[in-house]
Length: 204
Image 1 (tube, rainbow, N blue to C red):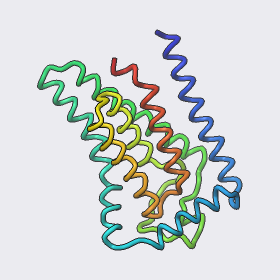
Image 2: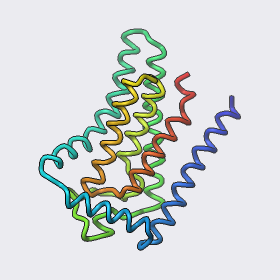
Image 3: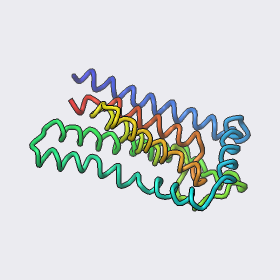
């Protein structure tokens, strides 16, 4: 059992190291093809904004806090009321996945210190100016962690489909709003998904 836990921890940190390495390569090469791709996508999204779409994207972006907390909290309450041990375990699994992935995200942000798109490129105009650093996206990290953990806990299509649709929509909203690059949200999605998969033994 201990060997299995150590193996999971090692794999988890390998994922973090790979993400950090890739981010350093990307950030150190401001004119790299990856950076040019990031900038082009951000400029295209900014040019296509409409007031109606912006309202929807702001709503999606803000929803992550309520869903990330509400899902495990709801399962925990349901498990206590219904005396359902598995539901309580699922609540612990989802909450742990989201919390640990978020902590790893903060660590990577502190290490990489990638500037926000609107700071890196003054031609990128954000809907609002987010604080902190850019890589990886915290929204994408936590939402994909929640979506993956929930999907592993309840592997039904009517759980999986809306979970990932929501996570993907939140991640897209961060690019649309001009506060994260495509590579930021991609790295966040990988980190969140990977963390949830590695912590799956918690729910058993």
